[in-house]
Length: 105
Image (cartoon, rainbow, N blue to C red):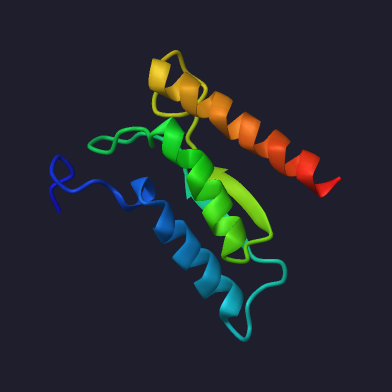
């Protein structure tokens, strides 16, 4: 797969919906189902677009996921560095989490 021509699947929020539906529909699915979302950069993969992370979060919740985690590495490729894309993604993840907490109360 050439990542310069084919965007990674995390840039397609419908993929998150499909995962949410699949893991929650299994007969022996863990209860509650949790979805780990990709949120880091690595070698040939850039950071996920911060604009798409909100759609990814809500699509996986619509698919039935009850919990969300974020795959991120500390150090150079993690969301906790000074890269502008990393900082935008970190802010968006925080905003999504606060929105979900507000909606639950």
